[in-house]
Length: 128
Ligand SMILES: Nc1ncnc2c1ncn2[C@@H]1O[C@H](COP(=O)(O)OP(=O)(O)OP(=O)(O)O)[C@@H](O)[C@H]1O
Ligand SMILES: [Mg+2]
Image (tube, rainbow, N blue to C red; front, side, top):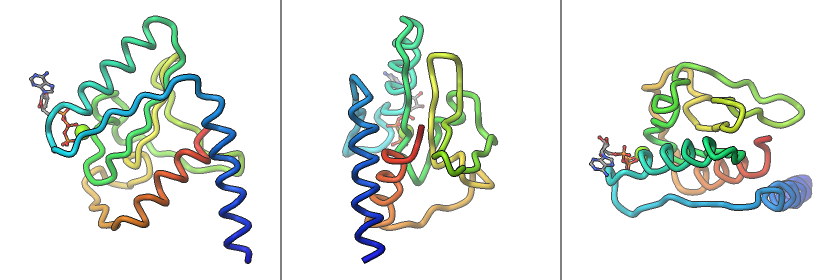
């Protein structure tokens, strides 16, 4: 019952947060190494330079390289009661990545499907 209530509350937070984001762009591909991260970072920077408020959510849970590409590799984030504060790259650009929660960039993440979905959902519902 508690699990169910938590799930409903999380879904509500997720919906509320997503409603506040005017445009969402998903960069995705079924194939690896085709330039997803490159496109994401350049798109984010280009929009930020045009004075748009941009947030990058890195959903690469196995080889998160957005922190390295944006220059915040090695930084760590401690989730607080008010949600999770993303890393502020510049006043227009913030980013969140599983890399911010690993003690070591090389730490293996061996989660399977359901845990990955839970992580992505938590990013969507709890990152400020
Ligand atoms: N348009 C392009 N032309 C040539 N090389 C590119 C281009 N875009 C990206 N690359 C290079 O291809 C390699 C893979 O790019 P990138 O890391 O962005 O891909 P990815 O899809 O995010 O990979 P992964 O699946 O490992 O996350 C990098 O070395 C990058 O510099
Ligand atoms: Mg990538």
